[in-house]
Image 1: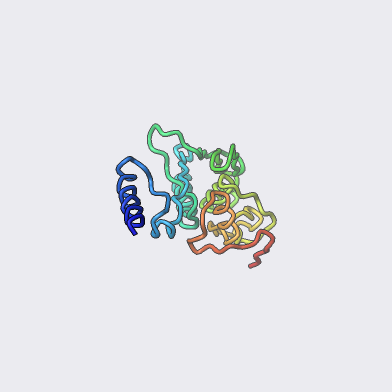
Image 2 (image 1 turned 90 degrees about the vertical axis):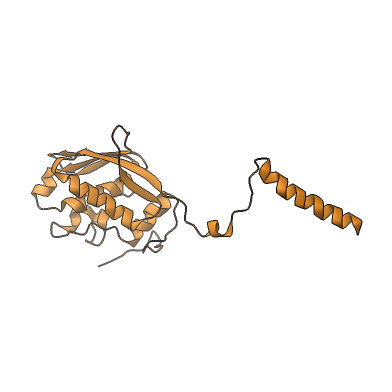
Length: 188
């Protein structure tokens, strides 16, 4: 009987001493288990996007509304951005250097032909987030790009595109996206 009391007292003393010695508890608090991991923050510099600045900001906001695992934020003064956004007279394109980094060109050629600048911005940012073109494709697929036609103004990723970005950045699907197997075809 005396041994059990001594063992219990020793365990209690160790439990009190461990935090005082700078140790960390190994078990997560129950409320931490339900929290989604913090998003990976990517910064973008749209300072050279000229007349497309508001379209770039809207494209970034659309991705922020659509996924949890990554967040696009404007770079602060003097901060090196993960993503540079430039306006030029060519066709829109993205040159990813790695997942979450690269350069986006918002080309005036497509805008002059009638393509929507916000859709272009959101589409090109999708490439930086790891999505390939999916051509030909319906307007409901953001990554169908120009094959959806000039009448298509949809700047939002579909469920499969959201799921792929979530998987690329290791996040859980918690915002209106549902898991869609990669071989599923979504038709209008």
